[in-house]
Amino acid sequence: MFNRQRDLRITYWVVLLGIATLFGWAGLQKAIHLDAFSLAVYRYHLLPEAVINVVALWVVGLELLCALLLFVPAFRLASLWVLFIMLLFFTFGIGLNLARNVQTSCGCFSTSPMAHSLGVVGIIKNLALMCLLLFLLIQERKKAGA
View 1 (cartoon, rainbow, N blue to C red):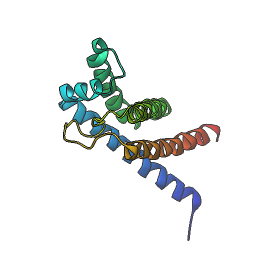
View 2 (cartoon, one colour):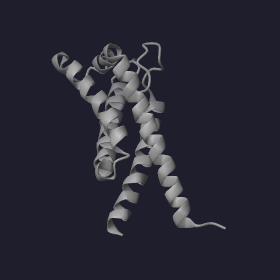
View 3 (cartoon, rainbow, N blue to C red):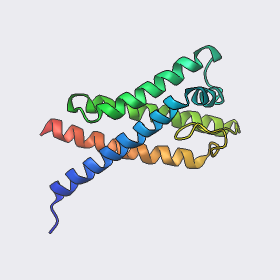
């Protein structure tokens, strides 16, 4: 009937594929529209103007690299941690701008200036993604300990 180990493995791979696809797609969209993504980063008003383009390029590169390396077992754990830490920073940025009442799109999955502005929904989405990443991190730790 139910096989907990099998169901957990299936859930693990579905979540892993979902996370890799999500961050791969987001990174690809940002890479295609790097100028628009740099503008989104600038509109957060968190970084000095001189480093905006470098940070935007690093974020895009990390998202794409981590999405690919999730399929390489030797790099999976590191990729999961990098994505988790990036989401922590993104969530902090959204929260800070909400507190400062800055109205701008987050640049997460769309670089369009017409995209939805930052809000509590963005924080909830990030927290949900962080929960999925924690699930994957816990499973990786269990595999390492087994």
